[in-house]
Length: 315
Image 1 (cartoon, rainbow, N blue to C red):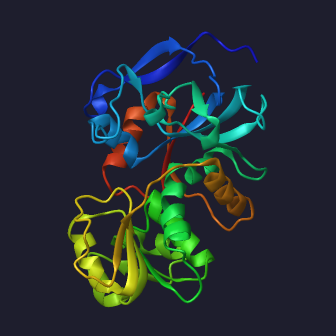
Image 2 (cartoon, one colour; image 1 turned 90 degrees about the vertical axis):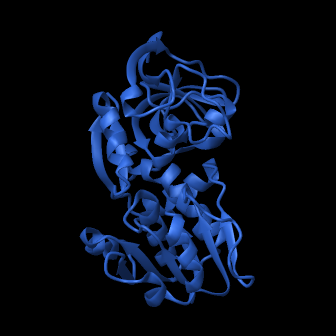
């Protein structure tokens, strides 16, 4: 494949809302040492993406404008600077702005190879996207930090979301008794993901229904996070991602509160894709947008009530 010199990319020139996006012609990046150049086929839109755009992650790194946003993407390898990947491989990858990579909201993207893994046969590019940022945001709290297993009771807050939906499936697969909260419109959907008991937060108090829990997975924060400590059994863990505001010190001495450091390593994504190839984890792609409508995909994510994974297809 002949790689063009320029490409289309969605850029922002300052922090702000979705109206800051501009579709521009930019040079195709080069694959540096330890990286891959991909022809992008699909990209994910995650809450972290619009929080970065609004400036919410400036404490970790400053964007260099004009900036191309976007974390997870799928694509075909055009150029590889590492062993183990070759042109033509289909991969799931996550860009890393913290290490100086531009984002993936473009026709081509240079991505770190340690944040990339091959997509197995039987898993489409669109399906694979569910196991990038969203899937890893569930994998680390449930599998690695919570060490969820048979006989445990797990509560997943916001079980219909892109992260919560994977967390429900993982906890069920690992043998736990799974409780999950959601709104009334998503009750049947969350049941279909494997939750043993779905809690309608508009009518029920999850503390009364789910107590006592071994692990509570929080993606909400605020009052929900505070009240959840009452539902933990002694020695229990409340682990969070993207949950604000949160007091890091729990109100009880006999429980733990931890923040997951979400790093989308190749190994973590490969483990999820292996389960997806076996039909154990099912991608929940509920909204698709064409590349020209990427700002609309962001607005859909920003409602805070999006079900499953939001993706953008790239021609």
